[in-house]
Image (cartoon, rainbow, N blue to C red; front, side, top):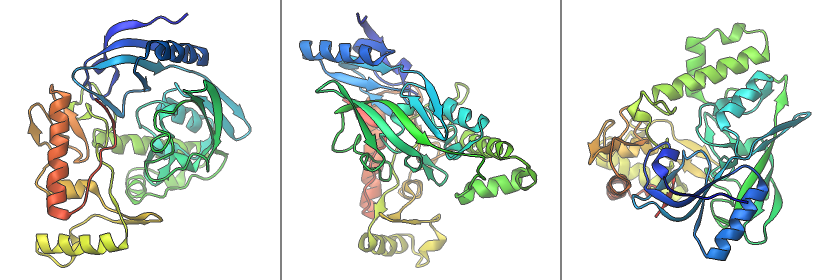
Length: 356
């Protein structure tokens, strides 16, 4: 039988430390726990919100007037190069597990907070890799029929920070496990220039003899880079009280991109826009524009503060909580969005899930 807790402060369960109390709160350790909770919520007509590691979600100051389900499903099984991981496993612990067992594929995704089950939803990515590059299957509980459905990689409809679980099927499923296909004893591939430069300048990578040593070196490098940007949760670092990157990098089609380049150069008085912008990545979906550059050129500097919230002093994409409120944070995000659009005619979109 399920055991619901009452009036649990949600700020204790999110990395940005915001949010009022949940009317009801339950930690589900099995799929049956989840099903029983869903039946109870449906019978009482309660709102329902799923919570993983709390790194990509923001609750209102008033809290949540329904049931918050924290997913605590655990377990890792290996079959050849296929690894199936329960949704409640800590993502970075799993990455470390793969590195120590000589599996190549997700080492550059080290240090990302949250749970394994959350990673397919927004197709998390960093340093030239996305989690979708290695996912074979996702299993998810259909909240309506209370059955577990299996989705292959194509079924998930992955795109840049997107999937079916975030778009057309938002709130329809609860992910229960993810199966990854990783390569054992394979030379790691370093795709991202910033990471490559850091490794070349700070390690003896080219002299390492084993893949495990190389994987460990890549993981350590990623963790060091993320730490310098306050992108790793650290109770001693006020800049890390965040959801990580708050805004997605906008992707523009060819026409939008051409107009943006003209506008950017005109506003900043320099026709050589390439000298003013960091690298713009051409992707199959279009041109990915660095949101951090847009924010800074719209008048918001690193370390900017207002009403006890602000921008990290280490990274312009991270909005941080310095003892403020969800209301103040969302007001700041809207102000940034408006000024960026007014200046560059480019819309920024928040990455975290915002629960009102």
